[in-house]
Image (cartoon, rainbow, N blue to C red):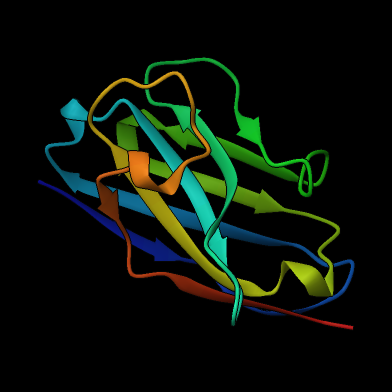
Length: 125
């Protein structure tokens, strides 16, 4: 089992920045990848960013590329999502996810087997 806890959400004006954190505990040695997804009211959960737990660069949705950066600190079992130049359309509940098996893709919610409880991000115009 892997437990995930997100933090860092809040209210910010358009153009501002927030940094989300996701702390993992439990069988963290079994993780292959971690990702961030978001879900706005009335919409499906969508991919934001992901990163392999062993190395390499991040993967991003086109809508956040160039504005968001995913990073990890393996020693702290923590993944971060730095969000800059925020827009009102970034408003959503942001979820951290982890998976304990290999897949070629990173953007499908169904391929993650552990989820955090979510943290609200609200961007005002």
